[in-house]
Amino acid sequence: MGVVTDDDFPPQSAKVVKPRRCKKRGRMVKSKELEELISKATRAAHVARDKGYYIVSPEALTCVEILRYMRSLPLTPRLITKTEAFRTFQFLSKNGNPKIRSESRSVLDHWKEILLNKINSQKRFSEKRVLLGITRR
Image 1 (spheres, rainbow, N blue to C red):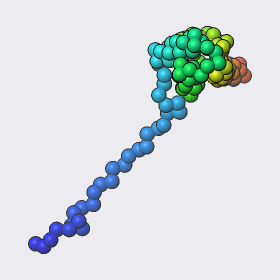
Image 2: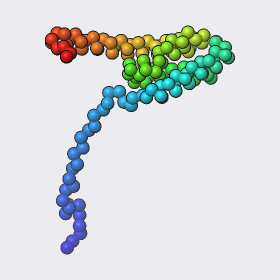
Image 3: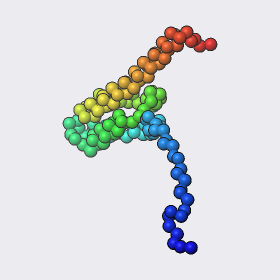
């Protein structure tokens, strides 16, 4: 018996690992999280309004950061309509602070695009059903 080397052992079995499917959207946002973000943004906007419209206050910057974060979230049309976030952002889009106003308008435009895409996809689906002669029973 001599010295044991790696060549003396049988080869290790290679474990086949299937790659996981990546989700398109990542983690979905819950309605409570969205409502909390909206309330933080509106509170910061109110405080910034009380301090003055053209003063760059930390509250105004906080509100703008929250709005930018909300624009980047993967939201569904149902979540946008369920939380009544659209109405709140219409209120913020009339804010006196120009930074808050422009950022909230960009969030509104982004959300309008999400809602319109959903409506258009439903129309295309119903048109395909009509073309194929599929009806509901």
